[in-house]
Length: 74
Image (cartoon, rainbow, N blue to C red; front, side, top):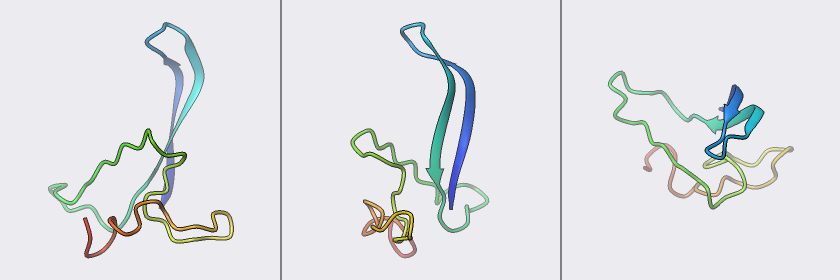
């Protein structure tokens, strides 16, 4: 599921401030009560947050890690 978290007035290390920062992420399946099935993928080398999404009309390609992330996978 695509989701986002908004951070107002995000201060950069340089001291400059972004008026608003949007952090986009996806979740898959159900989180275990103890969180043991949570995986954080940092993706500075990619252009989006679509790790394992199926193709949609808005995004006509599968997520870049579809072969690794999902049921029965990592």
